[in-house]
Length: 357
Image (cartoon, rainbow, N blue to C red; front, top):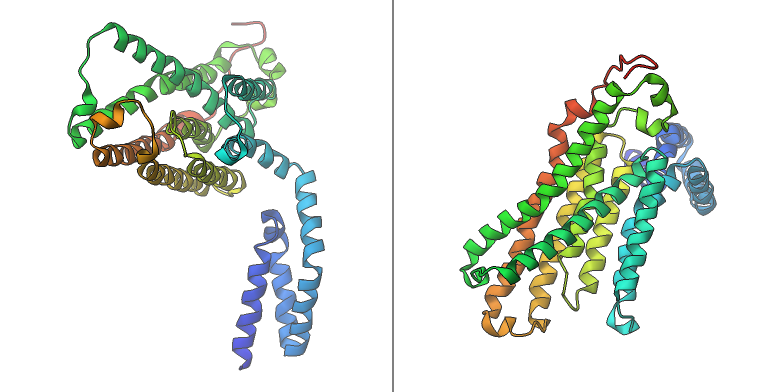
């Protein structure tokens, strides 16, 4: 092997090792460490090889120290807090697999929702740090979707209506697209009303009152923060996608894992563009997983009388394609904050004087 190939091989291997370190360490020391290897390579192959082996031997201990330092500095604490909501539903999918014999009941659901509500209250007190945003985005639509579904069921019991499920596939998908938009409408209405109120609030309150609020309420938000809040809404839709399904745990687990990876990518990204791309990519993978899951498990369902009156192949296609329709709305949801960027990020001058309203 000639010198240039050996040079590129060593630098390439060391470049792979650097990706094992926390992002802040790579940004601070990557070029310095690379220069050390280049100097060793200038001396001889043997010195470069010894240096590389020494790095490998010390790698486990160095990684532990670097990640512990990053955790103590607060970055990884925020990461774990933001990822906890996705971990909860991953663990739920694991524990309620049939092999464990655990049956999900309403008390467990209330316990989970109560825990999330407590986190939201803590986020309000702390001024909504970034890690708390998906909790708000999850809890609000979860409650609204429950109200909407119960209202639709009540209307269906008291009003004669046509069985739209007997329509051909594509008209049913068109109705599904409209229905998903209807379900999102109250969520977006309340969300953007709250944003407008919070943007106008500094104009109405005296400066002395504003200074008493947590710092998180005073700082200007980034448009990607709103996308991360709506990412919690996407988790709610992903969970509702398997409502009343059986044998869905592996698919729910995989979809939640993709969403967890997206949240991690968002919280560790160095730019807003990369952060939102991480959310879009994870959302796409999660809902494609749900679509495949529905295609696979629809024949395993035991919906009383339903599958006997509907062609199985058509139901499989509809259930799988309806998830793609939902994915379209989830993309719209994540990209809406981009249009609101000037309103969200531009600072508002507070001209109110102390004592004036």
